[in-house]
Length: 286
Image (cartoon, rainbow, N blue to C red; front, side, top):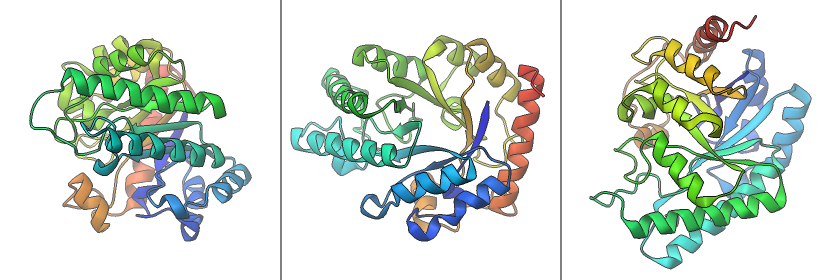
């Protein structure tokens, strides 16, 4: 198992000036860094790849699809924009040397129709996800991660079993489930059962406390979660995802209104130590 940290805990952007974040994360003991290339035109993908190689870091990428590129929109032009953006992000992920491209990448992040998911939305979501995954298959071994979101961020895929259903409908081996404990604790009946029902389709994991604070300071049943990951044979990357409320745009998008730790560095290092301890307890690792 390797352990990662989200770059947006430290910087709201990731352009060339933000490259030193990679060294900072490595010095804090992380094996991997997840980056969201929100500024698509200025994301320094090739430089990320070189810096990560020099530091011995694994790179993962994520994204939240904007509503104007919503791949489950009733407007086919909007869906086409979403697929084209997905392909551009896949190219950038490949250029950066990413292993996984995951997140709210299968529908508009924050898009709520005011009703439950429709059959048309399901069909559009499957078609759009398949188009992106097919493109990824042609270009690399990149894993596409489908992250179930809580009900306040999407009405489309809220629980692990629906992510599995979507992946089975897409029918391509490079599409996996991206589990995130922040969302799971709001939507699943049992975190352990949700992981086990996902089985070998677990492809990426966010380890987030229920309030996005330091892992171990909230309500997530970490022993249960890691034990279930062990049961399904997951052994890739556990990434801490949190954000600083001083970052205006991110705080607004993720509804973070209070300090979750004395500093981002405290959240990262204490969270890493806690997760490694739980890993040792459940996996029997040194």
